[in-house]
Structures are given as C-alpha cells and as structure tokens.
Image (cartoon, rainbow, N blue to C red):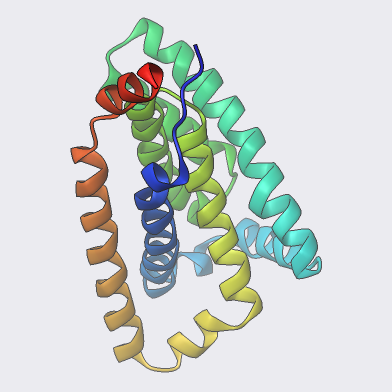
Length: 192
C-alpha cells in the first residue's frame, strides 16, 4: 500500500528552511565566528567558487541528499534503536556538526541537525529532513550569489529586522509542523 504525502504537507518545512537559513546565517555573521575559523573561510571559498548552476546541483541538491542518507537514515536511525529520541537527536546533531570540520559550520550544522533529526522522527521519512536541508542550502547559495547578505550587512537595522522576521516565521512554521498529525494524514491517504 503506497501513501501519498504531497507538497502541501511539506510547505511549512519549505518556509522553515528559508527562514532558518537566513536567520541563522545572520546570527552567525553578527557573532563573527568566521574570524576564529580559517577552515570556514577556506570552505566558503570552495563552496561558492563554482557557477550558481553547479552550486544548486551539488550544494543545493546532491550534498543534502547524501548527508541526510548518512546522518538521518544512517547515524540517527541506528542511535535511535539504542537510545531515547532526545539523546539520539543530540548525538547525531553533534556528529553532523563535527563532520563539517570548522567552528561556524559546526554551530550551524549542529543546530540544523537537531531539527533535521526531529523532522525524520516526526514524519517517519527521509523526505522531510532532506527537503529542509535542500531548501536551506539552496537559499544560502542563491542569496549569496545575488549578494543579499552583503546588502543586508550594510545596515544593522536590516540585519536585526530581517533576523527577527525570519526567526518569527521559523517558529510559526515550526509550531504548525508540531500541529500536523502525520499519522492521521497517512491513514487518510492509505484509504483512498
């Protein structure tokens, strides 16, 4: 029996991804953690050197798919068999952060890893965290390419306003995801 879960059910994840990518990047830029991490500066040079099309393909699509298969469908799923959800979520997020190999991405990926594990647990499918991961990476690639972050950093009021707006949108979307009863939805689609 095959279930249908459409994009409508994942719209809040898309909204969360866009808001979190912008808001979390803003917070990390304001904290200026990059000044403590030469490895991060080198990583960004490598990530943003290719054309936008290549960034979209690799950073926006392929890398998130592979990382989600490894870290959520692999590491988190194995940890989840041996420990309660919260501990599996925290440990897999820490490993995901460490895997990125620098301070800035450790913080960013660690925070995101918590949410990605939560979505995997909530939706019982790799599609949910994969979608969030892709949306976040695509948002960062496109906005970096079009100098959005440079424009925003020109005025602190822009940074503050956009960050507050993004975090509000993120939390509202997250609350909406919390309210979704995926089990009922899947049962409904299975009957059709």
